[in-house]
Image (cartoon, rainbow, N blue to C red; front, side):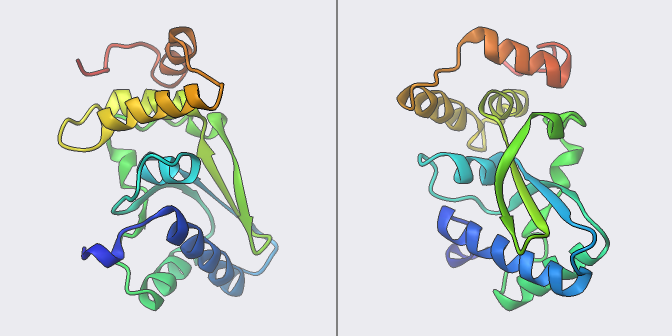
Length: 175
């Protein structure tokens, strides 16, 4: 992907707004969709320390019209085919419980509800992933720093609770 096709806080919101319009055009208003942003996209949406991500990882709950809408937005803005994907579901950081610990972010076109993962659960996901070749560890530090700066520090008990609620134990957390 070229440098002009990365996702930033500004263009993330623009692409999601366009996705809401496209989804509504194809699906109408009777059956809304929900997307839970995880990973780098959730960090972009909630924090200011990361400048970009290369794709948008998400839990997507929608009718089949969503795939068409995603492709239409991708074509319109020359985005790669997997610009919005649920591939992370095949990783060790995925938990089917993520929806329980998500929070409202924005709604677009009255049919596309965007949610993000709450801080301690996002931190648990990053710890579970723990990829040294990615930004997982710097994301952990960034989340902790920004939560502290906002006057909402994450102590060990909150993180421990999140890890256990998502993954039952710390066993899968990398060193």
